[in-house]
Image 1 (cartoon, rainbow, N blue to C red):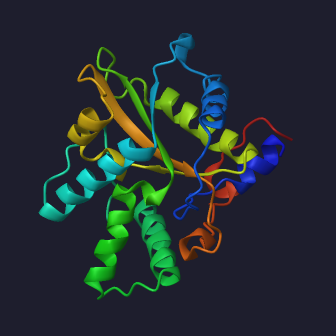
Image 2 (spheres, helix red, strand yellow; image 1 turned 60 degrees about the horizontal axis):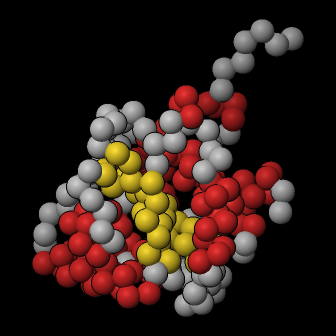
Length: 224
């Protein structure tokens, strides 16, 4: 798969086969991703890869806290969108498509709650990658670099037939990750990536998101 095909094919995968992902493949993906650009080659990222019992423990504890009503306690800047903005509208459009595919009505609180749980379970992927950074760095400073390494992970995964989903929900209870993934307090937990072999029969994986036409978001200067 060439780079252009990978960029076009990458999508958020929210349903996975149970097949385990070999450690050697995950290691190669991270080796490739570590080639991502960073400011002055600072490489402000660290990875914790979970599978097996470690991942099961995190899932179980996340769901217990979620269902208990425990407030989330993310350690990074969480994205938010002004209610009347195009950004909020794009998010709503995605949610509508997902709920339609999953046959979840607006009024069905039980199904909506079950869908919410999936994110806290890393969408039942056989592995998850937790991306963190050192607390000696500013809160926002490393985020551009970490975005680059996350994108490179997702693109590299395609080469091995894997799917990914970048998500905040898997990091909303950092105390769980510190307990079961042994991430020290000296590290700020930034994002999670669910990773595994996609189950293309899972309804949510049929989502097709649109992109804003380039002419609407680009200003060209100095061209004939």
